[in-house]
Image (cartoon, rainbow, N blue to C red):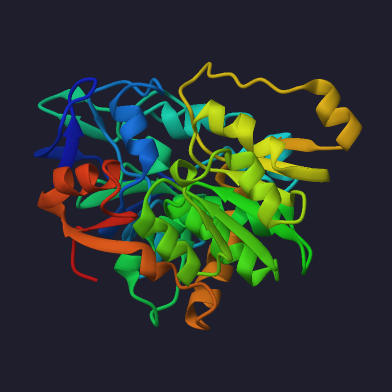
Length: 370
C-alpha cells in the first residue's frame, strides 16, 4: 500500500513527507493507522547520526493509532483496537525472560537497526529502494506503521488516543526511572537534572512517590515554572547560582537521596552524582553520543556508598507499565498532557525546531483521525 511518511535522506537532513510503499504485515506483525506521534530527542539523535541507524530512514517511535490488520500468528490485538506503540525486543533473551525487556540483549538491533532483525528486510520502500522502516519496531512518522505483536499496547477508548504516543518512550522513560528503577520512599529527596519531557515526567513520578523535596534543574525559566506546577519544590537555574552542586545541597539539608540525569550531557552527570547524600543513587537516562564518558572520584563513591545506574526506557515492561500510566492520567495523578503541544503532520519540521530550541516540551504530530 502507498502511505505518506517523513523521510530523512542524509545526516542532518530535513523530515520530508513523501509517498512510500508499505508491505502488508507478516505473521507476527500488526498494521497500525497512525493517529498521533510524539517527537523525541532520539529522533534528532538519529537524524544527526549520533546513533547509526542507516539513512534514508523513516523515524518516529512514539506512535499511537488504530489496528487495521494483523498477521496470522497475532493474538494479542485485533483490527479496531486502539494501541500505543513502544520499543521492540526479542522476548527471548535472559533480560526479557526476567521481565526487563528494556535491557534486551538485542535491543539495538530491534530499535536502531532499521530492519527486521530476523532477515534484514524493511517493510518500507520507495521506488524499489528499501528505507530504514523498523525504527523502534514502528517508524511512526507516517500515516501507517508496521509494528510487532510485542510492542503494541492496547489502551481504552476513554482517553484521547492522539495524546498517548509519548507514553511509548519519553514519558515512560522519565516516570519509570523513578517508579521502576529508583523506587524512592515517601519523605525522601530527589534532584532531576533537565526539565524536558523526560525530566518533568520524573518530577511527576517523584511527587506521586511522596518525595518531599524535589529539585528541578534547568536553564529555561518556563520549564522550571512548569516543574514547580507539577510538584517540584526547589527549581534551580544553573546560571543563577555560583555552584549547582552546592545549591542543591544547601536546599536539601546536605544532599539528595536520589538524582535523575536526563540531559545527556556528561558534565551534568558528573555534577549530579556530587549532589547525592550518603548511600544516594543516581539514575542516568539522558542519551549522549556513543562513546561519551564521564569521570567520577572512585573513593567518593566508595566512602559515601553512592551508586550510579543506567536506565533504559524507565526499565519498563510496556504491556504493564503503559496501562498503569494511562490509569494514573485518568485519575488526574499524572497530568502529562500539560507537557504537550500539538502540530499537524505537515508541520513536522516546525515541531522538531520547537523541540530543539526549547519552545515546546513535548510535540505531538496529529497524523490521522482518532
